[in-house]
Length: 328
Image (cartoon, rainbow, N blue to C red; front, top):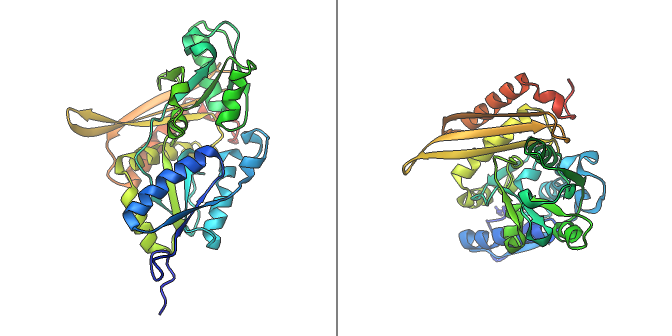
């Protein structure tokens, strides 16, 4: 009987890794490819796939949220065109489709957002009326709220495009600054362009920001087991809680929801997990921000329960009315 699984039978055949074509996606996938080569001893080739999110110039909220970056990769997995795929975890819809498994969540990069501003300016040094570009309602809500509470005068401007395009708006003088994810710039080797790291107390990141997701077909048991060696249990439990919060709020991945789960240590022992969540109106006039702390979850179910508990408290404080994507 022939073994048709990606790790069985013909071991000289390269494993096919599905990736988006952007520089950032290619950089992330290249890092994962190196790690997979190490754990499997197999060659890995990148298969570039164009997604609707890559070619559309519309705002993400109008075309279905960041899930539009994922659909084509998942179709390639289900059809057998690729053996596994790498996603930015914050792009993944919270519902896992049948036939696919989240085989690994590697150790997370810096989850913070960062500012790339003209003249090396920090957020607090921006001039009155500064124009700050971002494609995220979550960032807009928190930046506007922070500015309002600290007497700063800013204008948030919706933008789309890759890292080069966004930073280009600053270089050309069209914008005073843009807000990007620290992890993306780090993976591109461009952290030197950051003019300010925004504290999570100022701007909570998107659920799962800074983490990668490695997905494969549920039928590829041998491959899933090999990929699982790249899994970081602390990262997985943290992002599971964050994504459970997002799911329980019944919000899509373009909704103005921020979340971050921190592992809290007593000396050398990690014994608690703190989950913070925020939902806000884009203009920052209304913000619901709460946190919950509990024992470090020891199962997927425990992590999900923590996220749902915080979501319940946020909904009780009026979070539903701030998201736009939820029927009241």
